[in-house]
Image (cartoon, rainbow, N blue to C red):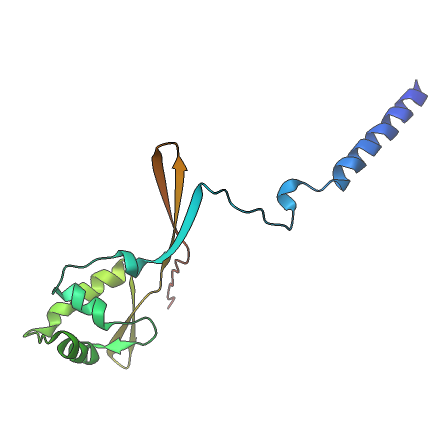
Length: 151
């Protein structure tokens, strides 16, 4: 009996070694091409958003960029140059800016008592799967950053 147990243990050990030595398919370094049914598109959130023409949000979207911080004086100057519109009360732009900042679409900073704004570059991956006759769309936010300031 002890001899049989010893032989069984040896055979079990060989089975374990075979399992360890085989590399699972999901750990392969080679990437298999995606199925032809699934297509993926990479877009910016700013390409998807549409503002009503000639509104304050539309003007802010047109004058603010991704790479530079812009203060209110520069915003007013750009709106006048690009759209030919001068606001009687420029403070009405602040609620629109605050809403866009709260949504995470724009960033704000306050340096030397002057607030400045810029757009946040958010990318969206849209995957379309064709399952039979119905199309399914899946939207995934790729680079959403949350910055928290600790005082």
